[in-house]
Length: 374
Image 1 (cartoon, rainbow, N blue to C red):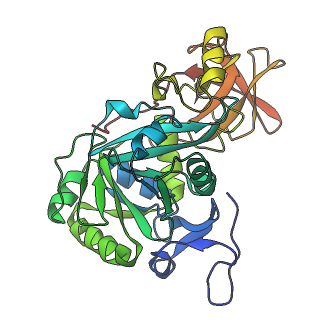
Image 2: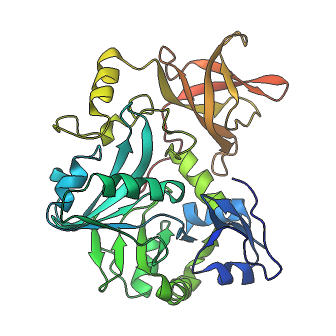
């Protein structure tokens, strides 16, 4: 994540902006580049710790309009995607969403995404911002005649409501709060509400027309006013997802990291006859991965960061790399995710080279805090 540059009028130079960009600027957001978009990292007067606490204790509102939106339609659209993506779309029907992966032929993760299945001929894909164009290119290049891919990246906004008071906010806003996990419902021709999120708390994500984003945002803020709602930036989103052990593409999963070693085998329909990277992933699973994703829990004051070396108990032999790391606002100590040698198991004590010293950490199985998504 790097700071974006801004022109004289405050508009980011060379970066895409959210339909809510002006609201963010007016409310003191610290903006930074994320996946080619200028997005709020935190807000003045609050900050990451307060925004994180709002989601864990009450309710938070996120603008995640940088996420991609690809509409795949036409006869056989769902079947086409099922031959590309790792998840078994045949296991879900209309009105259900699924977390899934698009892999390359070596088994590495091109992207992780959510597929919203409206029917056999209509599926909305929500990939990560930086990978949306690549996902669209792969889907379009392999599509059979009659299947079309529409890039709605700038035509739709995505707003997330997350936290234990989510249902109360939805009720106050006149929105359905009775959806099952990963179920979605249409709110009109171009608006959808889905019971999902990236924080580990009960929540929903709204996909709405970009032209209506400000109306939806204000409606949700007003509905949550008596509930202590906070507008939250991507800084809190990162600390929240790390506490849950959720992977971030570009850190914990990449084109060079496969889902077996990343602990995402559950997102693969192993019995399917076809999906991209299937042969490579079957071979990796059969042989056993050389490294495994593990959680890191600080035994001292060390805070792990992406790219730091993980060493054995002696402090001399490198056994892995930190893929994500942060100070946990909930637990008040350092936590992280790492890829380490496969013979390292939860409960083992390892070291992380933090600046000029080796700090002690315990390998654990995430999540670090209880999940409340259901």
